[in-house]
Image (cartoon, rainbow, N blue to C red; front, side):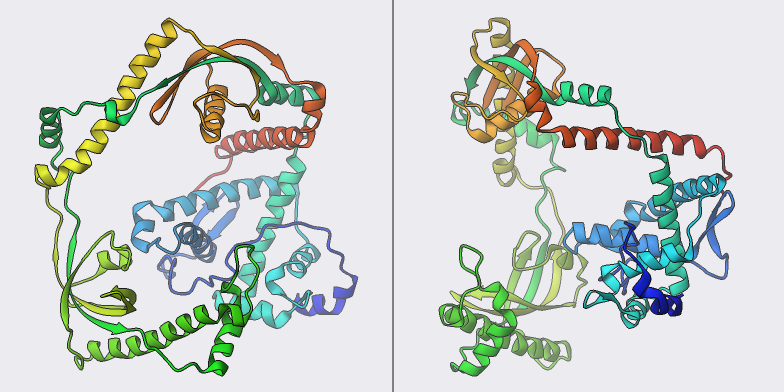
Amino acid sequence: MITWMQKHKKYLVVTIWVSTIAFVGAGFVGWGAYDMNTNRAKSVAKVGNRNISISQFQQKYSTMYEFYLNASNGKFTQEQAEQMGLDKVVLKRLIQDNVMLNYADELGLDVSQEEIILALMVDPSFMSDGKFDKAKYESVLKQARISPKDYEQNLASNLLLDKLFNALKIDTNSKDLDMLAASYFMKDRVSTQIINLNRSDIKVDESELKSIWESNKDKYLTQTKYNLKGKFIPKIISDENLTALQEYYDENKAQYRDGFDKILSFEVAKERVKDDYDMRQTRKLALSQYLKAKKGELEFEFDLIALEDDYEFDAQELKNLQIGDYIKPVKYRMNYQDGYLISKLESKDIPKPMSYEEAKEFIIGEYIDNKLKNNLENMAKGALENFNGRDIGFIARDSKVEIAELNESEVSEFINLIFDSKSKDGYVILGNKAVVYKITDQKLASASDVSNYENLLRNSAISIKNEQLIEDLLSSLQHRYKIE
């Protein structure tokens, strides 16, 4: 296939959009791998006439693992994946895809070799200087531990699904647009009454606080305490070597920006560059000291305690530590001096129920919040029965109006909430305020207002109709093809 592509690539025209497997960049190295005994079976499931191979399962698992890893800023773990049943989620997704692929087979749809080649040619992951690069293609797949055959088979499945969905796609009509316009652009004439209640107005009953503590002792626990031995490496103050600083600046200039996001010149950023350079040199020293400590060649100098919410340490790393484990150098400030800390876990103090005095500051915050909300709701209900609001005129979802005693953010939240409500009157709690309202009239936005959002309406209508179509079709087809 690649040989054919290289020979004929000048005749190929980019005419297709395709969603491919999102593995590039992460490379599946080390994490997100689901272990299966390949001697036990060649596939994990069969749907109709299609098998779901172990390779497909592994690739999909790694893709979804990567998604959660990125969403959690690198804190998603294999343990969390097991707790959420990621393997079952992946298998369900693959079964649904293969149900639809069976239907595509039944309809006689197919993907040609030329279509697969076109998709590969336009994938930026495999390009160098704007052109397909065979060496890069093979390197990326090798890094991801996927054979070209497996990758191209999965790509063919994605292309076939895309072709099926395009074939099934239904357009919208004027009635759909009118319905959405009525939903999106209906204007309500609203009257409002604002009720304010300050936290300081809430009277705290000490006996109630103690009762809450007695009933919820297991809720109010101390943090895990990590007893560490530490050694501090103060920041190295190096000589001002302009050549070294210039080289460091050239490597990292993108991080030195002004308030307008423009890169600062070396002269302007020099002090920051010098500080960062010194910290990098300090980290190198700290790493060497860390390795010595692990070999027993370095003595720690002081005791310290770390808690789960200490910003210097990674909470997940602390949680995974075993007694005797060493912690790699972390940035640390000691006696008003920056540097790096290396440390070793001596012991852990597990969480235990707080005393009343320890828990009081947490209980009282929740107590006041609940009392404030309950009092506001009671006052709002009374105000609604004897409503005396002020007419603020007609408003739509995107209206920018001023409401006395509410800031811009509160006005926006209030408008969104009343348009999501099915009631013509009610109240909305916004922090220490209750907004009591009544809708007194309604009207549609003008034709000119609606026309400004015609593309939005059309795209929304198409999305809603087609998502529902696929959902209903999938539900029906799952009883049509045997799933093993």
